[in-house]
Length: 444
Figure 1 (cartoon, rainbow, N blue to C red):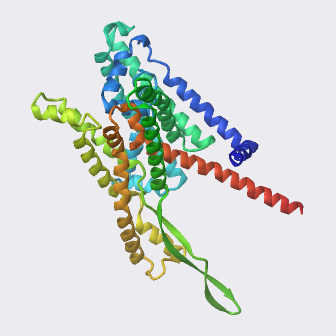
Figure 2: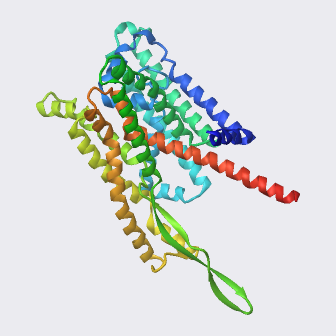
Figure 3: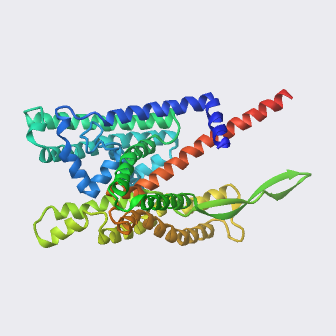
């Protein structure tokens, strides 16, 4: 405990780091305040049916979780930052097929700025598609008395504009946090939205187990222990890697002759889960389509699809979900980890894998290792993704909102963002430590 307090004091003593943390917290508070403001023209006291719809549909409850409850609150931030995430995914995938985007990706800082601008415009386009769908759902779910603007077309137009502005504002907040704060701003906003739902979910589970005598406090304690074990497993998945030994050679000239002097051995870390949380996001997006197709018909097959794939805790849903995650893990890993480029960079810097020829053979060697470690990583990722359904069936009576925190996208985002932010803070502390040593040395 003393070490933890000393660490907090060390963080607070660094002026630049303290300002970044306060700046980040300030913008997060602004984002959470915006999530509480309802759309103009809606009576906020009549939003109960919308909340019931989100709680009754596990997929809508997942969307509500990512926005910190703004989705069910008909907030100006109801769409949250998810349109920006969708736009980023689309631009990343288009970069594989479009030579123009590939050229921008290799153009350094100027190319990155242009890609960011393209992503922003695409975010607005996606918002203008999702906004009317969300507003139409409001008009269907809420009673007529909930709308304070009599002209329905005027309300729809106003609501779509406000929703688009809310998403753009959230995107701007995320970019400002990344530039002037601490951590990745977009990821932090998603994490804050998820954490905002955690206290209410735990209180519901506490009341369910203790107050209503549905299992008692011992079962609740056991659930918390299992939850902590899943968090530990997620941390291991995020941080696990396979070290590939590397050797670097440098050419030294002296005494009228040249000779190769080999540097110290280093390692290339190939992550067990190089794709991160993206396979789950891709698979989750595809799992919405069967429900949409099922809603277009009244046949028995359509009703089965709507019932089966509209429930995140259904066995068939989780089987298909897990298979899609494994497929997308291989797909996204192949996109993000380009072994041929790694081998080329190693060859250019006089680096090589001991016992493997530089160039093509090194690329094939790295690709073989990556293929072998991706399979267990993909299976482990799929298990964590479907774990909420497993604990929901293992612990009868568990609240759906609390089961969501036992795996899936939510838990992996929380773990990944927390690790990334902690590493950035540690980097500041390490730099401060070295600066202090250097200043002391100069004084002596």
